[in-house]
Amino acid sequence: MSPTDTLAIAGRSFGSRLFLGTAGYPNQQVMLDALAASGSELVTLAIRRISLDGYSESLVDVLARATAGRPTGPVGLLPNTAGCLTAKEAVLTAQLSREALDTPWIKLEVIGDRELLYPDVEELLRATEELVNDGFVVLPYCNDDPVTCRKLADLGAAAVMPLGAFIGSGMGIRNPHAIETICARSPVPVVLDAGIGTASDAALAMELGCAAVLLNTAVSKARDPVRMAAAMRDAVGAGRAARLAGRMPMRAHAEPSSPQMGLIGG
Amino acid sequence: MSAVLRDAIRVNGREEPLAAASVAELLAGRGIAAGTFGIAVALNGAVVPRRRWSETPLRPGDSLEIVRPLQGG
Image 1 (spheres, each protein chain N blue to C red):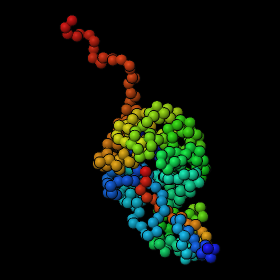
Image 2 (image 1 turned 135 degrees about the horizontal axis):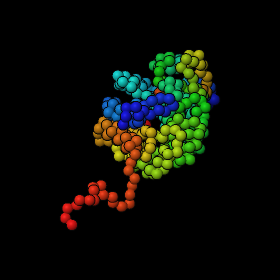
Image 3 (image 1 turned 45 degrees about the vertical axis):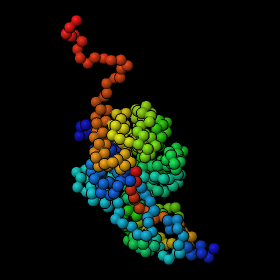
Image 4 (image 1 turned 60 degrees about the horizontal axis):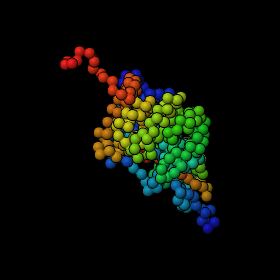
């Protein structure tokens, strides 16, 4: 991958095409080590009520300190609206996150089912429109549905983030043809969000044409999260390089790669 | 019931006696200094920008949300 192969979303450049979640690690140090190993320049956060019994050091301070010395600058923050069931809840959560973190970037999640964590498309479209009009850089988590992705882009989403499989399932990309179709048609970058289980899933996402991959559980719940973070970094890089290289056409039959002339015997 | 409600506010979904005159005063009572980065507040469903914490009064029946970023995916 050439060093100039940067990803641009809403005017911001990323050298790494891996976005990393910060939840579910064995402890904070493992999370920070995994973040370093991943090379990710954008991490997701949740916005939650403070504990009324006082609170510890801010996660934002910890992340800023741990990544202050990077050549690319401190890691970027992508707050989410995880858990929101309506556009109204998601919009307020986004507005609170903008106030808390001074960033207009939002990973917009509006779910229609608390067990499946599947997007509610109607509410997602409504929230996207409202937040775009309010000046947000909206990255919606959405179905692997080309029509929904196009509607989101038309409303002004800065990227679309279709799911590969259920959030946290590690089931990989269940419908690669849909993802490939979305990538081929999308006017905005496509970020594969949710479902990645291991490195080959991340590589496949990039080979299908995704601009980036967002994952969390595949790293945080790996036996060795730091090593898996490095594997994901390599997989995203390899998948991107393969995409740019252009794969050979598939054939139904064998095609010898060695010359057919000059065989001994006969 | 109504007497209780007149003097109470909801903070993060929990009802409590109204004992602060402003948003800033209520936050200070919880150890959150004025303008602390990473904290955001909504009063009755609308964000109160940090710079307005001290000038935003609290009234009985108000509902306040105080949030911060946490680990997320």
